[in-house]
Length: 409
Length: 179
Image 1: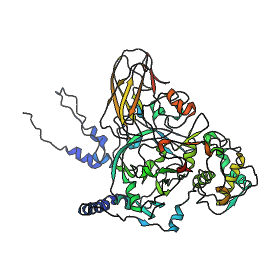
Image 2 (image 1 turned 45 degrees about the horizontal axis):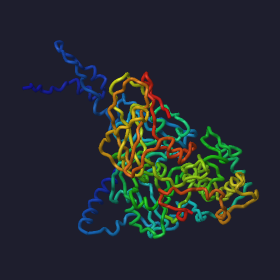
Image 3 (image 1 turned 90 degrees about the horizontal axis):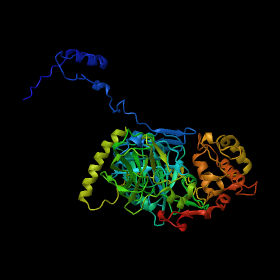
Image 4 (image 1 turned 120 degrees about the vertical axis):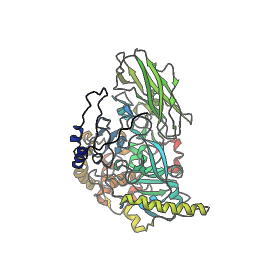
């Protein structure tokens, strides 16, 4: 039986603790002369110094990549290359802003719901928190994710090519509860959702979506929203363009027509080669990408590698992910990691032994509507090579003989 | 302050779920405050495509040109060509081409809601009408350089590109639901 050593408080330890100098504590490690054991680290940082809100290890360096010409319009890309599982840490969630990030006191924030409803009402955050709540895991993807890739492969990493998608657990009030509470006019078909940022960003939302699975989120990954994610309130329209998930939500107006707002007719409409423009393309269609190994990485010689990536669909649930490691000749089913949820990132894996020869790896997903992720050639048939939004084409990573991985078409 | 909300909410929700288990259907939660028209008017900045929401006032291209020079040209360029370094694309071509907008109300709505970028909400109604008049004459949508736009005349503008918008069938809407 193992001898239990009695814990003997070290008087000096406690004296130092009182002085809150952990450096002095670390110096207080002595090793018995006859020990063959790896020396103990001794006591770590004082509990009083670990902070009341946790921070990651100083060795965890993953950061977002930021971009903005004028400082107010722009965003930050999620580092997908070392992402694990399906959830994005709140602090690494992508951002796109149209007038910076407002600082809103929740005790002063109000949501007005008016227009074609019987009762027009103003809700405080306290009011909204009293309604029944739901929590759902959903991805959010900017419609412009991969915008720079249409014409040619440009991104140097999966962060640059695909970093405008992230996944969180969101908690809030189902919008249908609020709308049923107020009584929707029979002719209403649309809602204007408007943010309380400087841009007062506004999008027309279909009433059918509001009555289906839309909700007003006040929490993300178990805590109140980050300011950058719309604190204190954001609309979640699962599977729809990220831009429609209005942050800092201050107003919902019901009407029989859409507003054709600036963002829905210019930035987020899809020009086509025939000079027509596709409008109200809400859905983020099925897409997948291998996150590891991916561009910017280098394989360390032939041998075993796990291929890992993410797949998602705004129209439903990921049914299948196929992976090719020979440039698209042979496709094999990857394993999907549970849980596999609707309108949510799904992590996939496939074991692979690299023989050291030059090759191209790629993934292709199919969702439960039967939709198959297209190649660039197939996507061009719909939007032409001039498209900007809704790039969901198959991504190819080229692996050179020396193991260097690059973004290729 | 905000953290206390959880506690209040918990108490309220517990009470509510007890009620819900006793009664078959909860008629109304009754939370929130009735919004009177004066309160709604403070928030209600949007312009509908039929012109509903357009405020009183008027402006012509000359007034718009004056405002554009002071407030807009630094990013959008003297010739509406856009200044890339400021993140602004051309208003003459491409994605932000003003000629391609389906409704002139979209333009008024956006200027009023979001422009100028660093000081949104500071333009008067006359100035906003003037800017719309200036932009629509500069891009050739309106031919009359002395046009005066107000709520009635702006709502009556037929934008030439309206018919080129294709409604994504996945939206579950057709033309009659959107125009």
